[in-house]
View 1 (cartoon, helix red, strand yellow):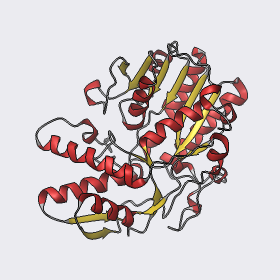
View 2: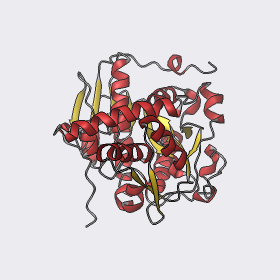
View 3: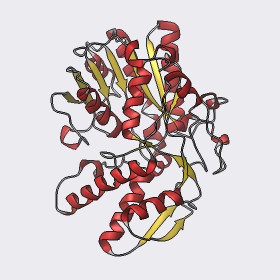
Length: 354
């Protein structure tokens, strides 16, 4: 490997790692990832009450706090060697198009967290950005070329969520430039997998479509409504690739204050994704298309040239493999909920529009 990220870090197994947003999907998986790596002091934070966390890892200090408030951020990062900020109010396209104010308010989290981490003397700070930060003018065709890191400027990010990510990236870059705090920025491309949101309004396309197919199997009504015309394209990254990538990026000196794509480069249309889920489920659906529903940009893919150059690695879990695992997990969740068992990843709640 050209730049071994594990060798680059000096963190010890008993140093304190703080992970914000750990009651949700990606940060919850990251918490378990570091626990399984043998780290003994992990502080996990989320504003959701503990019983509503998607997953909780035994032996981890788990705190319910709203990190949009500065005093809570000070408490959260106290004694931290590394801080991973994945906390945000977000969801799939249906959420981020309808609740732009909620998405924009997440800027408070990063603003307070990075300042608190700096004052606490944290050595490294990770920010989870998004491909929604990219210029939307470059994403108007399903046969879109893959997005390079430089394509975020000239800036024309997705309204709400994308602009919040872009300005928060700038905070991270300036804390390094002005205050010499090591910051790291990954632009996620559509993360999916077990323990993710699968119902309730915040779920993304792989989970939403999988749930619809499972519901059709259960009811015998083999009908599915697809948002948009089905020709829109995306790349989807499996959760295990995401957590590994975060670790590698955070501990690579070449990537200080340097945004980098973290996503699969395998482009697939929504129609083809539905076909894959049908094949996994052994069912054929009758498709209808809702052209009035939120659909996002026409096409988006990750150019992985930079991550391959720097890390000699890129997310590589085949979509079929990841979707089979995701389907099996959501099918069990669906059965559990039907049996009256509480399933927190399907009980996300939507913000008030008042």
